[in-house]
Amino acid sequence: MKRETRKIVMALAILLCMSTFLFAAGQKETVATDAKKAEVVTLEWWTWNSEEYDEAVQRSLVKEFEASHPNIKINMTLLPTKGFETKMTTALGAGVGGPDVAFFSISSWFPKALDLGPYIERDTFDTGMYYEGFWDTKTQFNGTTIGLPLGVGASLVMYNKDLFDAAGVAYPTSDWTTQEYLEIAKKVANPAKKIWGCEILTRPFRAIWYNYGPNARLYSMDSTTVDGYLNSPESLSAYGWFYDLMRSGATPSVSDMSTLSTENTGPIDLFMADRLAMATLNQGHMLDAVRAGKNFGVVREPGVGNNQRHVNAWSMLVSIWEGTKHPEEAWTFLKWYVGPEGQKFLMDNGNLFPSIETVAVQYKDADKDYVKGFLEILNDKQVAIWRGSHPSGTKVEATIKDLWDMIKLGTIKKSEIKRELDKLVPRAQETLDEAKKTLLY
Image 1 (cartoon, one colour):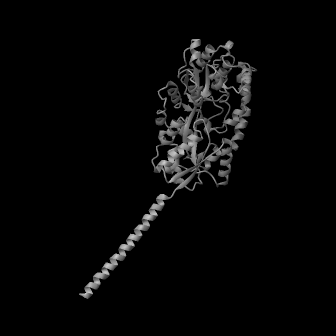
Image 2 (cartoon, rainbow, N blue to C red):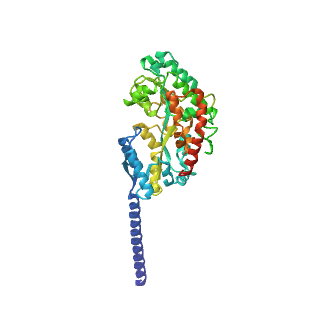
Image 3 (cartoon, rainbow, N blue to C red):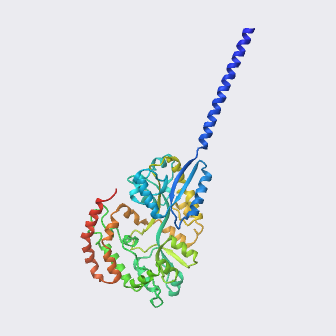
């Protein structure tokens, strides 16, 4: 019996030891799990102020995100735009001290952005939610996805309904043409009262030029040839239309604009002062007009026949730096911030128009005509598709500025425009060839 008792006691002792060991191990595992749960990652986010989202709105955005993501803290650094550019260039060039998440607004920074493709595929992140034009023009680089598009902006024509009504002129419609634009501008202008039909356009090769046809470009699609594009019949027609507009009396004269410029007055100021019946502005100006109680409408820039319609539009690219030590957390913040939740927050609390159509249609005044008009414009083909694929365009365009100035000042006859375009071709071709050698990608 004693031997049996001894065996029982030994067995109980072994069981007790095992229980103690298992309990201790469980405690350690629980502590380790709790520690892992309690670990908080701090991300560096560099940004700037804008009329779409000021500092207060962005700091509120951070609180909103952190409330639903307690393991991620956001250290938001607000920089002036010039300071932002300098700091980003320095950090990305050195490969140290860069932000986890930031605007990647300069093409030379693109190679330093993290490839988001694997994260998008793993999480089945719906990239199709974004307006196609903004996704195509902002997020791709050398076959990889380097960021997400935040917000949208676009050039649009705002028209003053009171001035149109006073002149007895019908409002423009979305299918209007460049010729109709010219005729409407002349009818609604009243030079005696210093009321003009429209402003002086800033430069060629924007949406209206592209509307004249696929050959109304600075050079060929393959970036090799200027002749037949800069001086094409379509380009000549666009320049001829601008010539007619400048001679119509519907715009302020160059001297008028010079005088007004000394008073810091531009198209938006003239429009708000009931001096311009039509003005090519943007969504920020549109919201200014709403706040000022202006009676206005919105329409896309005029087209040419049945040619494809274009829009001069833009968005901000938000990316993750390739040197981030916290790619998972940075991706979590990025897809929230530039996804439906973050963009809706900036829309509801700031002045952002989202790059996600399902969110944009929830805008507080989505039933208003001016919002419907603006959202319709966003589906037109973007000028940025061509310009983004042809980074030498800016330098080439600089070589042809003299012709634009001659038309504005009236120092050239309409019949001489073709000859001048032909004369510009060699210089533009030389600039194109040289610019291509210096491309970063």
